[in-house]
Length: 391
Ligand SMILES: *Cc1c(COP(=O)(O)O)cnc(C)c1O
Image (cartoon, rainbow, N blue to C red; front, side, top):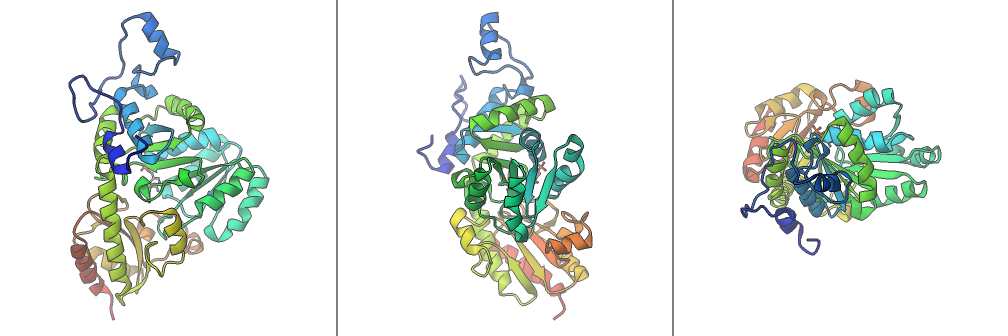
């Protein structure tokens, strides 16, 4: 498969050949699998032969075929499917975060909650550095931190981290680099090619792509993935076969969806940058974006998410959001329908005003997830909503 382009791999990535010739991944909606003999059962139990055994172990053809497709898309040796993005993160941190982890920049609110509220109860401690504090990373690695975790682009400011430079530094100290690649998706960024060790996804976003699936993935080398599989099994956090089949269907259109979303986001970012009622547009595809050159080096497209800063206060910004007709007000992203959210009311609502300021998250920000509607219609919708700003 590896000699084919990504869109081809996303359609033909599974080696499963169903006896009826089904072109789609069949749903093996079954919890267990029967064997011809004790010998053939033992071969699978002892790992001498791959095969179907028990669904919670991921040993279900729908689940391992989905993982095969996803590994082909990412260009990774191994892949595990989880019931959510957070479940994937829990398995990674419990396996590799125990000697201390470092989290760089802004991360998904649920990740922050996991790292600050729950994992410390298990003795898994994470240090947090903002993008402006990267010079402190080496000191933390010298002290023994063995896992460096970040998102790039970040949420909601779309800050870009240099995957290659950070991986080189972390590897000098024997630490692993784990990237939450949810925002970029494998269409726009493949962190393993830049030296990262593991990639995690919330498949709930672009991979599922229709706002109707909750799932997650971890990808990397077999050596690193195998121990994570033990956690998935014992935490019981495997993706369900029904979800796995739906997700395999979604992956067939991943490349075309994300490309269209990224192209529309560029059109919208440029249109809004020219609108005086918008103070700032944060989008890695804009030449004016501070990290544009770095983004262009490690991304093949700039993604379907952009953040604008309205020229007004929190109330005016909420008025703009409320006037939107095509954009739904919701804190998620990656679906076919466009969504808008004011981070101060949703994703970063639980942070103190001080912490938001430290993270440069302002009351006037609106994060836009661009769907598959016509971009001209979306620009028109945003333009009429911006009439809420007094000139
Ligand atoms: C949504 C999201 C997650 C969590 O994913 P769930 O599937 O909701 O558990 C993690 N990281 C990022 C960047 C996300 O957007």
